[in-house]
Image 1: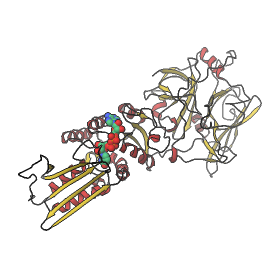
Image 2: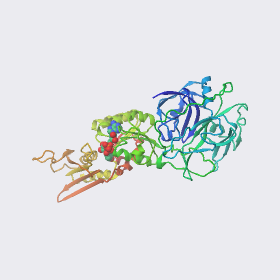
Image 3: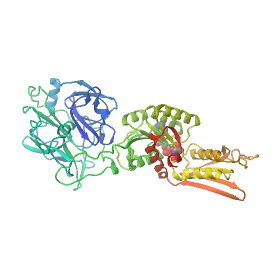
Image 4: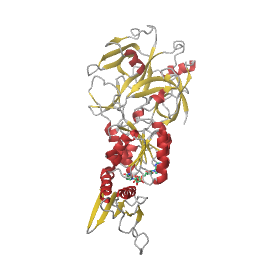
Length: 548
Ligand code: NAD
């Protein structure tokens, strides 16, 4: 987990966040710090240097990194840690200016060709050599023009490199600000009040892949940074020795973006589209899932990914570390890899809600960690004791957070419990049979416990049937008893989650039965709870509290 010093050479717009790039001061070449968010987008809390502001070109900064995370089209990507960045020097040293000169691309080729885009490597092909370049342009012009929709503004940069003309989209956030009030037109830097003698450098960065109508995907060359060369630039000798290639590419992850959810941009041949513009909704709730590899966890990954207003930002489990949560869930790459350290993952991802489908022995600790970190838990894991629930409620209230626990997220099961409570007012003699898959390790089920509690509260008169026979030839034959309601637990292959509530009366029985045929039955409830939990205060138990 190294802390590396880099000379920042770009801070550009990417979705609703940023893409930062620079070169390492240890001479090991280009580096692009990325987060674990989709497409590595950086948020303000990542790239803002305390007491200084957003990192800007030519600042030398120290960044805590986790590891290289090279992609086919971005071999220089390194995953950052969630710790803050620091400025190490306000100005470049002579050696650092020399490093910049080594990084210069002379042209006419830029990132492998003279076009405005490069083909995205097909599956099985080697990664691109580089996705970042520094150029000293000639005839630099910045163009502000109308986009496809009236009122839209497009920023382009025209320049020559060793006699070849380039026309690329501009994503540098500083220049967007400089140009935002300017009328449509074609500007030199002198027109924009810069010294006519000033020498400018450009950082070129490849975009995420776009799907072309031809079927060949492309990455566009973007002008991610425009900045004046450092003062001592002219005085520093031109270097011929090239900069080192990017740090070793141990694992190449193909990026398919946000799989099905991501809108694919289909290109027309010309003009180049505006780059990297599919921002997540600003109001998306950032959701982490713990137990992400389990039967329920995988279902939750799918549901969160597909749910409007929710964004999957982290997936945690004790198994399958590093694997992509989307691939494990069978929905393609989501660029959210399984992490094993819950606290680290929550801190890292900026999650607002944690969905827990783990095991009875870990759920309590997970909830405490989430609450300590200001994250609202939605809990499906059963097996929490009354004392634990009380402690959770108290901590949640201290922290001003909501916690939602549902023994059963299926609407049908919730209705069954409501109907059971209604029936218990008139038919107090009742028994519960709950039936689950053979791998369920706790019994009775949380649903059976809650049903029994509701029945006990709703009964107007005491039951007449005996919870235990005077002669129980095999101990336990009459099941366990809660609130004077016998409960029988069945564990067999073939079941997901079923329950029968049988009422007996004079000459009649009434049976309420609910069956979850598969785990998708729980997902509308999980999604609803994830959307609502931040509006709750303290502990709320039962989906009915959100529904009725
Ligand atoms: P599972 O065994 O398939 O999955 C549990 C997952 O949790 C596993 O991948 C395991 O590796 C992971 N895990 C265990 N401890 C962990 C920890 N400390 N940190 C991170 N990950 C950890 O179980 P399942 O069938 O998915 O069920 C999970 C829980 O959900 C059970 O308690 C089950 O009873 C409950 N459940 C609730 C509902 C409901 O509607 N509330 C519905 C179905 C299941």
